[in-house]
Length: 78
Image (cartoon, rainbow, N blue to C red; front, side, top):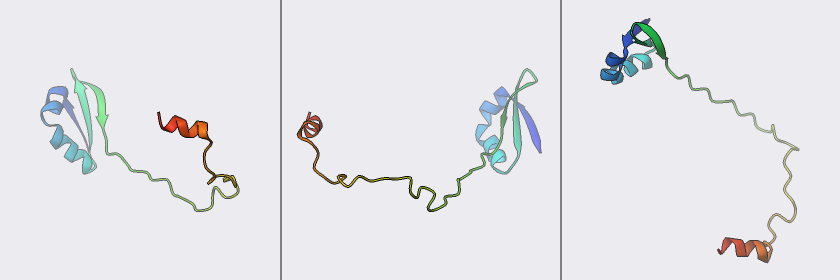
């Protein structure tokens, strides 16, 4: 179900309107009787993680754990 409210009513009753949206309703906010915005529930979309998709794409250098050069260490101490 969709309801339409004017901007004044939307400002005054925003919490109540958000509760209705959370329940699945759509709210149209109008100014001067003309629709301006639509409040709809946010559908959370979490991308499905698939293990192993980066296999053979990541390379860690054998020198990864070697000490940093002196000039680089000096930059951290500034």
